[in-house]
Length: 332
Image (cartoon, rainbow, N blue to C red; front, side, top):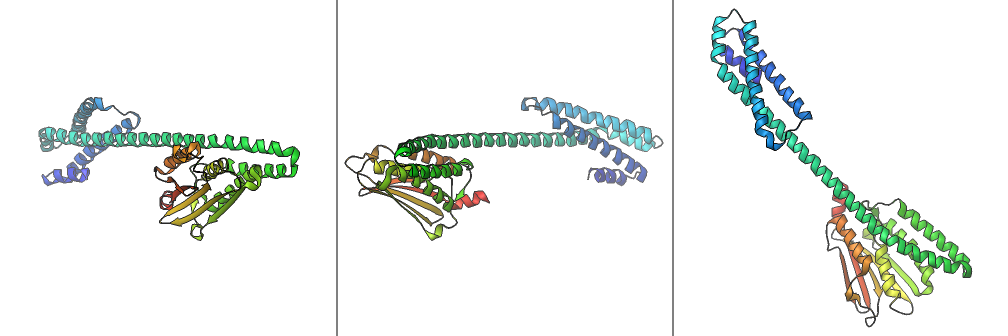
């Protein structure tokens, strides 16, 4: 476009085709070379915003030098055309203004492009840092739960080794399967609900070895949840909390019930356990397990309303909602 503008402007003034081509080619080539030089310089050097006017002034001087160089070249090439030489001298100011405009435009575009590039890099680094921090906090929350569970399981195994060695062996096998399944899971991944329910089954088998006939469990999953997904190991603190407050505060047999339903774009999981209203103080807090779970849900989904607790008679009910629409949009 620059070449055509230059060429037809000279040609329309009555100069020959040779003069028009030579003038347009020399000026366009020098402008292209100058702009490529500016782009190459800014690829390795990015001036700070405080030095913008200094950089702009240097570019303007550079644009003026381009016009002077172009005139020297054209005068040496077209030495026999005096009329063109006169025109060349008279159009020096216009050529300088045009060169300064083009060079300044390319300069500003490069500065804006580099600025946007730095903003993108800063944003990416910030997002990576936040993601690493979030993963670290999620990992810390998980690690705070595992030693507690492992300590209790090993104590139970130790108590069974002498009196009931067969049950101790089965408990070791269940514990090994449970821990093996947790090694390769990551907090920012999602697993099918069926896989998580299998993991909870292993966990409950270990707990049944500990508490014997006192612990009964009922796991119900609605058919509509066949394709539901859930963060790994999310259900363990729910069940652990129900067992802790269900068995420690009551006597006799206790039934822990877990039910999973899917409706309205949510996977709704509720865990209920009995409690004694006279001895339990459920209104004083939910304990570290549920607090840690609520924090984990916030880190994963950015919402603090996905975990709720309620009471119904002598039942303490904990409900977790996993937004499946949010999960599907992120996976896509």
